[in-house]
Image 1 (cartoon, one colour):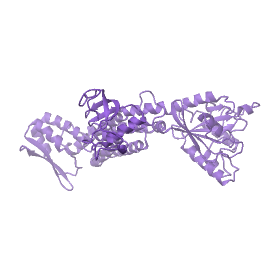
Image 2 (tube, rainbow, N blue to C red; image 1 turned 120 degrees about the vertical axis):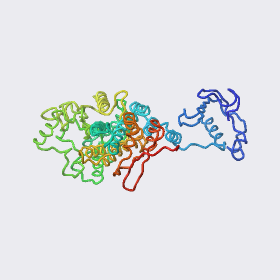
Image 3 (cartoon, rainbow, N blue to C red; image 1 turned 135 degrees about the vertical axis):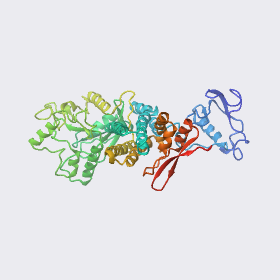
Image 4 (cartoon, one colour; image 1 turned 180 degrees about the vertical axis):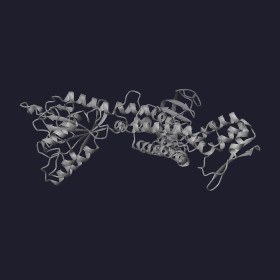
Length: 548
């Protein structure tokens, strides 16, 4: 397809762009009769002048030999190029994601980097782009592998204590205690990552903001104003919005999924409107931020709760007043800033914001909360007065809302969120549970079932390995020989003869033949280690090397 013209014969130098003429292949390399495209493609016909790069493996994206064709981007050129490649008997169109799958299979990318590449391709905001690039650069992988490396070292020490603790001087209970302390530290670090309030997932999928409130408070008008288009129907008739209307947009460089919901009120007997309110409550429960909208001339109830408003027509906490005592209690719970933007939306409960709309129609009064700055349990710093009709107060509100979203769910420059998908969270939670079990079992003193503790530690290591897709059940092979090497260097091979002639004992099977053989051959060149496996016991002995 690239004979001679426009840049020389044969393959170009590796990793150097050269100009080549792309031509229709001849019948000697094309499959079948060499036709295609209804006979319109003629052998040797010029397709395009393109830049060609030859990337021999393993230094390529997939780790395999690769050729890149940089053609002009017109549909005719691209179509003709693909058609010509399809005529070659040894070529076919790649399946979706097949090059990335090959890169992962050849060890060029781990699963977190594969996922990050997909996120980068689909990124629509700067925050999504930065997060995806940080993960592609190996930020997640390095953190996970650092934890896993410490776990494997602790596992090697614990397994060495099972097998050689009675004979080796440097495999002691103190080493086990140190391993337990280090695993406790790792568990706390992972728990801190899990308590990030879903920052990574929010950036990837969008921060969910639910617009809630009474009918005709201006919720749909606010959605249209923020979306800059007529996304929702606006009408003076109460109950116009029956279903959830969703719009994706950017605020403060962060992806936001904004949802307009049905108005909440207690006196509706319409079953369809009631169903809409149930959906409003569901959307409120899933939201990271609840944006409550009220008419500036309407008093705000002491407690904002969508679920109770949708539960039954007679119990609508969000739209009916409660007793003064309940109001004082609700205001007091937030008086110290609990639930404010520093913590709200991160600890688990959605962050609540309050908008007093239609200020252009209520100039006679402030429309604020009665008896103080707190309304609906929302402190004054999270309340705004706006008019969707005139635009009054909208720009400052959007600036502050973008800042809140960015502070809650944005990442610092260079910081990589460890959890960006549900599967990451699932495996990290499994790792934390296994580490807690290891600590409990290994802290039982002389009665500690170390074989079971090792299994828990191995499970924790595997959970981390499943996130990156690099699961190595023989991870202790890299660390146990170092322990053995120190003992051989100190005591000589005669000590090994005594150590390896151990009595039978119940123990988990450890695959350490290869590294142990390699180690001992380095030390004396005529001994090797073999493990004799029984159905219920394992023993290790020293065998004479016979040129194996």
